[in-house]
Image (cartoon, rainbow, N blue to C red; front, side, top):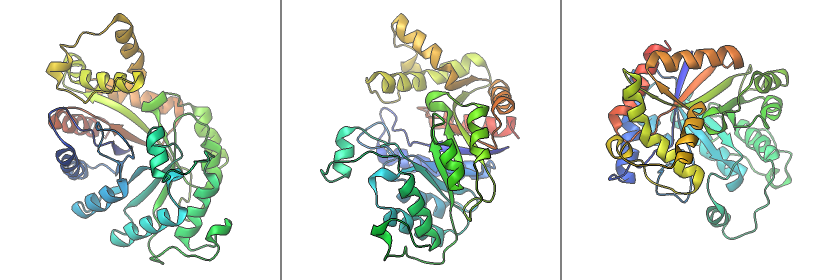
Length: 330
């Protein structure tokens, strides 16, 4: 099974954004050495906890610092940007590193109300499904005239570059049919809602239409994971990630702290119950246990690739998780 990494560039407590981004470069290089197929950067705004607000910039840098691994966005939040700008950015990236660029497109904001307003320069934002814009991006990248009138008389430059792979992000199944009809890959964020199903992926495949961006249907699923040599150690290392995810869900945002500090923090019974409930979204255990869970899910859901998100405090714990899962899933 092809493996990938989704990097949100977490900024641990007692660190800073510069160190976090530099760590992501080292992590991508390690992932390439471990045989990972893809390395994707997320887009998040108006938070001190994550440093991935400009994935297109980080993609360019990481692609230049690696030689084989595919590098892409997981994803670009297309509601904020012109289809022409997205097409030109990814044509440029493809010209710099042909055959290694992925354009993962998200329809969500990737931020809160103030960031949505700021990215729109104070204008009222009409929230729509974005599918027409995604078609326009695809047309502009491939040099086809867009159906949207604002793009009738423009072309995306540079022209004639290698096409990126295009993927549509989803977390509920709502966009599965549209991803198939667009003829792009379908990247499902299981770590977000845990709502993957065979019905969702079968619907995508039934409606798939081949395009120059994707000749046949492809489903990629992303898990949050923490692994260690023993379940006890894995639970210990997972605690900072659990607290981080709990804070995001409850609005009590806190940076990822050390495992030692995280395991000393006392939670309410309700908070502990919620963390246990989130185990469906965060896989924790030995490499064999977590790999077995992923393979069982693959039998249930039917996906083609697996991406791992490991937002640990300690850089060595992130590397340990990716190294161990690469071996266990090989």
